[in-house]
Every structure is written in structure tokens, then in C-alpha cells.
Image (cartoon, rainbow, N blue to C red; front, side):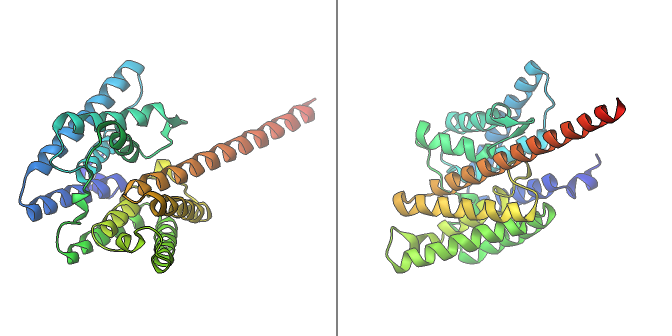
Length: 276
């Protein structure tokens, strides 16, 4: 595939957006440590993917692996030690091959690796690549990039359902003084939520394609995540919400596949009967 064609693909859009965010955030924070972190994360993810695919003779998806590494580097604090960055990328890349349905990952790999790293390595996740530490107006970069990516993968029903449900629930939780709901509607939490909704929830392999299912996915992720936020705070609620949505998408695909197989079996049975 030529460079121009690749740039117009969903993976091309996301890769370009993540790379631009990496540069903008690095300039804004006046450090190149984030770029070093990204090289470690992407390199480890690619190496893990290459070794696994070579051993088990599976087809590699380098583009998605690079995106996984870039997302990890934009979320982990750029002060995270390189062994922890590498281990997080390793877990994420490995999950893409081990937790699968019809050779597609069940859970968003980046979210899975980052979630595990919180409990295994107690990683600090600043979401610095979502510009939470930069002036408020920089959120426009997330909105612009998010719009183009969401449009390219046809996920607007899902994103709008997720963000709309989340904001409404958090608003009422704030009125009722439940948890730290009001904080979730301010930087850097709002930056993280937007980044998450546009670039992680929209992952095609781990989310549904049909509009109706996208809306259900978005609502489930928002409700489950918001409940977790109300109870425990922090930003792990984003990952847990994603996993609930991913599970719904997996079960829906599995159910649809089973129905299609049963229908095909009935058709074949009729043909055999008529053939006799």
C-alpha cells in the first residue's frame, strides 16, 4: 500500500494524530522524554508482535501494534522508568494475540496493558499526551483529531452515546455530591475522557459496527465506568468501562456468528432434503 493510500486509512489517521500529539505535548512540556518513552513502547510492542507471529506463524499487524505503543507512551507519565514502559507495552501486545475471538482482540490492547500496569507496577499515568497539563485551549487538538478519526471509522453514535451518558451522569453526581464527580468535568480528567473516547473506544476490532450496537456499547461503557469513578475515583474507570463495552461487543459478535452458522446449517439441511 502506498503512503498516500495508507494515510487515508483509519490506522493512518490514528497514527498521524498520535504522532502529532506526541510532538505537541513534548514541546508544551519542554521535554523529549516522552519521545524516548514512545520509542521504547513502540519498539517493545513491535518486537513482541514479531516474535509471537514468527513462533506461531501468525500474520502480523504492525500498524495497530505501533498505535498501541504510541497510545501507551502518551498515557504513561514520561518519567516512567524504561523497564516499566517496556513491560506495559509487552503486556498490551501479548494480549492482542492471546485474548482473541476469530483472530481479533477482545479487549483494547493498549487499555488492557495500561490497566494491568497500574496493579503490577503501580505506574503513574498522567495522560500527558491528552494535554491535561497544557493550557485549556489545547483540547481543540483532541477534538479536531478525534473528529477525523471517528468519522473515518464511522463511530459517531458510539462516541456521542458514551460522552453524552458520561457527562449527564457526572453532572447529576456532582449535584448530589457523590464522589469527585465535578473534577471529572475539568482538566486533566476531561482531556483524558475525550482522548479515550475518540482514540481507544473507537478501536474497530474491539467495538461493534452497527449503529444500534454502538449506542449500547457507549452507554454500557459510560454507566459502568461512571459507577466505578463514583466509588473509587481515579482514571481506571475509563479502562473498566472500555472492558465492559468490549465484552458486550465480543458477546454480540459471538451470538451473531452462532445465529449465522445455525441459519446456514438449516439451509444446507433443506438442500440435502430437496436433493434426495
